[in-house]
Image (cartoon, rainbow, N blue to C red):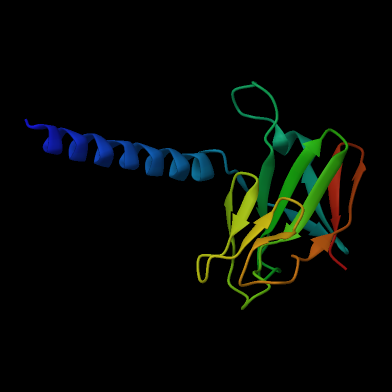
Length: 144
């Protein structure tokens, strides 16, 4: 193998590894949960944030319910602080995808932080957030 072929093979291999690791980082840790709605509140047991292998807590969950048009991403910042974000892009209404601590629109590439702020356009409005409270080991998302 000559030098040019070696550099090409190594470059493609590195690009493939980087792409694969980014994809797996975004997908591997995502837990989807079908949550109950009780009155105006979507209810999630705090235990849903625990990792199955017992190594700690998840940073986020994606919660769904058939009564909602879009899922909600719930980020755990610490044991008492959570952010609930409607996964609907403010640009044209496409359902967002979660990639770790950011949400991304597959239609036009808008990106949002885990508190709903626009990180990259074309969207220019923040995501809808929901008030969150904790009662008896239940995280309650106020859907009003």
